[in-house]
Length: 331
Image (cartoon, rainbow, N blue to C red):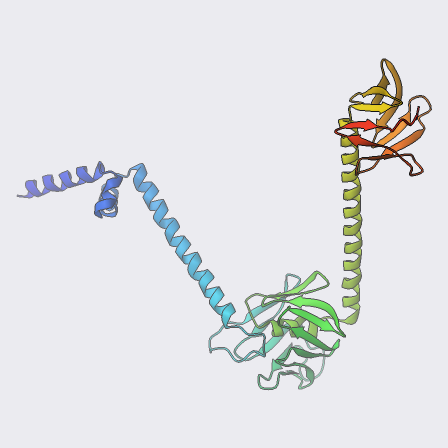
């Protein structure tokens, strides 16, 4: 009897060992792989199926994580934070990538890495605590360190009153946009200044960085840096446009094959030399016509194909790659 059972099992293993992808159609694919793997037999198809299943698991985990993040973001409003559920972990606050403190979403308190230098709290970390009903911030010493309101108004110890616009995510002072915030990051005039490790109310981000950490001098520096970047970018665009125009002009010059003047047909070679028979009579380079011997510029070709003298008088036009000079004698 034992021999019979052993033979049956071996036969089953043999059947699975040579099974094909068609097994999956009958629900046997996964079972067949397990049986083959148990006896040390694994086909290329088995390995591919295992890899595919693993990828599917990882994709599912990533999707669940993304869905969780989206759910958290959807639950956040650009208003004064309220206490989170007990056990919610503190969130790291960074200044330009360097951790400078944490936000306790349960106790509604920012604790900085910096410590008090003197007084009864000397050696203890500087902290600001939020009253969720009023938006008032109070230091560990009991002093007022600013406030924020659900309408976006932020009272800052350094900048005075500023405003967060939840529609545009802009931070405004005296009608001028001085920065932007999201649920994670803060910037000023294009300079990234800080971030929260996890999504929080953008009003909190605006208060933390624009409302309590930056000064008028820093804003002025970042504004000047942006102006310099804008000037450099404008200059680069102008230079690029000039190079493109010169390239087009040069390309157009090389594309002209014939020049007519005084009833004569002259050939223009690939170097831009204008030849009357075997004699060189002029040059066509970068859209300008010059004399052959003296090199004086006597005409130019504009972007619309009009040919003019150097003082602006129209003397001809371009037709299908050929230049007609209306009988003007340039050479």
